[in-house]
Length: 292
Image 1 (cartoon, one colour):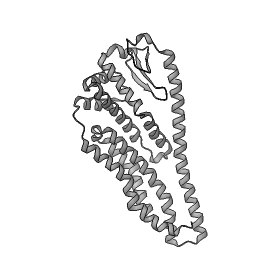
Image 2 (cartoon, helix red, strand yellow):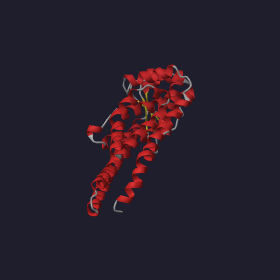
Image 3 (cartoon, helix red, strand yellow):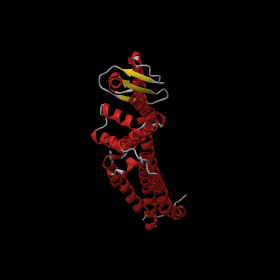
Image 4 (tube, one colour):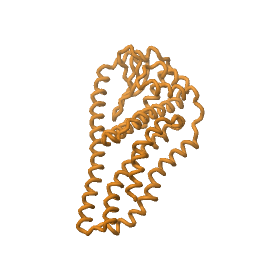
């Protein structure tokens, strides 16, 4: 029964919850807690998979009253499968992080070589680089020696306050290490079998992290400069996400503390309650049955 419950919960978290949460609009009012909720859903899905692998064989052994030799073999096989799941996730994470760091290192070298310092117009920002280009773009390169990159086109179309808003936005990405969050979701996406994959968490978290950085910039320079800068910069992330960001910046009312608390409590409950209600009772019985 434990394996069935965990399996059903795992499928719900993998196939149903991502679509529902990605379609919701309330995360726009609490983007940081919503990211935590996405992380809890992802981690809970992994824990459910491990629970099915371990609980399923034990419950079958107990139901059919297999002898000790068979139970030992099944236990070893279950542990090996669980180890493979964990190893696959770790290998995927290590691969994504290594490739990302290599790519950022090359990119950092390129922007340092192509930097047009004379176009900074007196901007005294550590790690700022300005590249030639008519297209108004702004982005950051994370790492131990981070860079904030603006194109000449961005400096031409933005006023002083909007430039400060853009820099504050990119610095928020760097300060909160949003790149690590994106890497973890990318690694999970690549490690999950294709039939269970969903791009919804990747796309939703990417947009929510942009909103978190928007909020940081708003706290520094106000909503109007952030909204104006976003409207003038080239759209890299797709129309719907840009429209949602512009919409929430047009109505920068106070964020709901109650909603944030509820989401964080829900994220914790998603990890804790299945463990207390389903896993702990199973463990109390399984430990006495497994050939330990």
